[in-house]
Amino acid sequence: MFASNNLFALISAYNLTMPPAKSLDEFRSQSQEFIFTIKPFVDELSALFRKKGKVSPKEQFQFDAFLSVAFDAGLELFFDSRLPGILNKPCGKRTILEAFTSVPEWEGTLRPALAKQMSLYRMPPLSRREIEMQLYIGAPTFAIGRCKDPSDPKSIVYAPSVMHPIIQFLCRSK
Image (cartoon, rainbow, N blue to C red):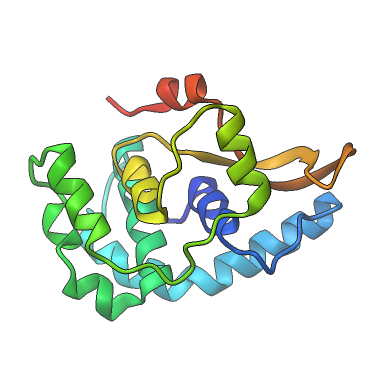
């Protein structure tokens, strides 16, 4: 399996040191660096998912959510948590949320521009683990790509942005 743009958007939403890319080349460079950085996590977590055949959208969302937790908390803490145990089991949202929120956050501060955007959409403030849980069930919160520069609305940058709640609803995996 591979990391998707959903994962890159989520990780970037909490990376306060990486500035928005001003050009497509800069964005590609950030993406390539991210793929290189996340590779050891991808290799370890791929064993939890099936190895052959087409990957379903549901599996991709689950993989990205698990990768985000492992990248933030570390592989050892991830594998010692309850998260691997919920995969491929029928679990209710409460059980899934409890498994996610049982893992401590290290990079849990959302970019201020995204927090403001969420409040404009009247989205409740969620923790990183709650957002990862939403991704796990197929409702990504963030997208990444061309968007207005939060510091200069007349400029365009390549950065994470909050998906409108209607789009989030339409993305939910069945």
